[in-house]
Amino acid sequence: MEWIPTRAAGLERLAQFLPSAGRPYAERRNVDLGPQDRSNVSALSPWLRRRLITEEEVVAAVLTRHSAAAAEKFIQEVTWRTYWKGWLELRPAMLERFDAERIAFRAELARDGNLARRFARAIDGATGIACFDAWVEELRELGWLHNHARMWFASVWIFTLRLPWQLGADFFYKHLLDADPASNTLSWRWVAGLHTPGKHYLARAENIARNTGGRFAPYGQLNEAALPLTEDAPPLPVTPLAPAQRHDGGPCALLLTEEDLHPESWDPVGEVKAIAVLPSATVHAPGSPAARFSEGALADAAARASAHFGVSCHTVAAADLPGWLAGHGLTALVTAQAPTGRIAWQLRTVEARLAADGARLVELRRAWDDLLWPLATAGFFKLKTRLPGVIERLGLDPAAPRLL
Image 1 (cartoon, rainbow, N blue to C red):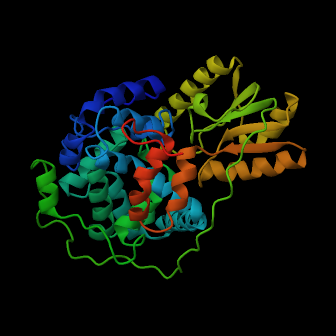
Image 2: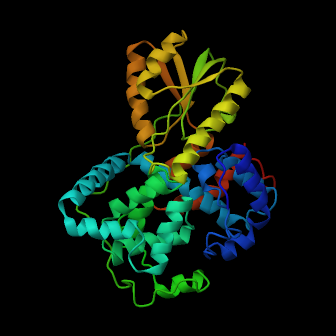
């Protein structure tokens, strides 16, 4: 599997996978065939994470090839990332809490020699647990793991190696091609038993042996009786989403961020006079596949946007955006809404500075997010049961009746 950071490559991979997106995917998705064979899963996540290709077009393409019943499991898996983003969007303080804990544990590594040694063995792939060590190597070399392997990895990290889950989430975030703040942080919390209190995920040797075709069989090496983690922090309240913004159609500049790199499909934005590209805010491991993918994806989006809108693109740091916009004689900066995370935090500062200058930041929310994020008030089940109606409302299923 080769991940090329362009929209064209993502569409090509989608076309290759479409024949398998129905029942074959549902039947074989949990099997990790190893890095040499990803034929049973889509591996579209690096492109979807940055919206080089979008959830809407993936679902629409699948439903032109398979019935909604046959493709149900694949479509649900695509929607998990949306669920995580929506859940965090409704509880943004969770990411701030995680970030503080992550920083505290990084500092603890400098003070606690035993923790530092155990952490080093884990991230160096030197634990002696063959499957875990192989997954570390795969993560470092390729920047991607099968979803089942990610759950096994996190479970071994938390319950067998007894390392802080926050450090594991940080390690994933720096190396995964597809890591976004919501899905990465909340998936680790789910494995630990914190997302759904009392319900954790335990890696079991028999399950690993069966779903890796016997490549790994860590019998006697895993803690298969661990209890879920607990925390003292109270549940966070749900904060309703603010209404989606719209641009008035006047002259504007566009801002591309790694959260949405398909500006050609944004809502009508009016006359585009200039385009800025915000550098990646993800803290990748230097020289990693993830770092190279992010850089390439931004470059691909800039080239496409320049050709589509007929204006040149310039890389502009967040702190320089107000001056850059004023230099073009514009008062509107239009971008896709960034879900809770580092870019959203940067944009809050930009928004305040623009407002002080009499300009404004307009964040366009895709209809997919606008319909699904509000459903992430509890577990995935509520969103899952409403998903068919959302797909019909968006007109993605050619076999479904159109809703007025």
